[in-house]
Length: 311
Image (cartoon, rainbow, N blue to C red; front, side, top):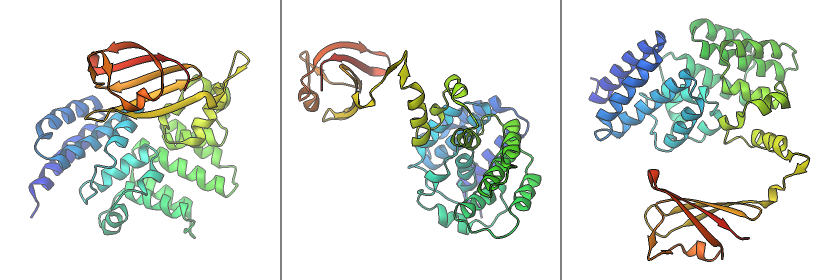
């Protein structure tokens, strides 16, 4: 007998899958937010399941940065189960978060116990085996078979991206053709974009026009690539050693603060800083010996302090 949780999740899946199949993404988005308001104080696991659906719909709407931020925000809080593993895997693949997903508690157990047919999970397991070099039969045929069973352009774009990786690994020039097919199906395919940057398909001029680094805050290669692009301005080099990022603590609830420094300019971003009698009760900040010029931006209760002085 199905539990109440199973029935609710099943109802959400039926409704939202219909919206997605009909490409009524905004209707799906509105429905998700309405349901989130209903369950936010009732059941945390159902609420997080709706967040996964929200992330998927944001991807389909092209709101990639928001989708990735939301996924990273809930990654540690999601408890994987038979009900959410397929949707979780779908978000992982669409957001190019495969490496991070390998660190998720319970993922191997859920994959081993999953006994239904699911193309996204099959593709995830395929990528895992390809990463471990454990395939010894026709990779191309298996991937194309997966593509035939799922006509979703986002899924097919990923199939062609993985095919491109297979061919590149085998030094087969067909990798470029597969990458172009992937691009035609989904311009926002993050796995494809990452490979294009890593393989030099996207040149420096194109990278300057589009700030792809916003999609990959966790990717050191891409961040370094963009730093190199922007390190020269008007013929003057920027010394990255002048940049510092400090985490300060206020010693109380909501006391996290971030001091960002470049050369002799310091910007402190703080949530809920405690002002009392015109004094700032931040022990770590006192030790920095900075002269403070205070600008308080009260909206959302965020205080921004622009400071001058050397660290």
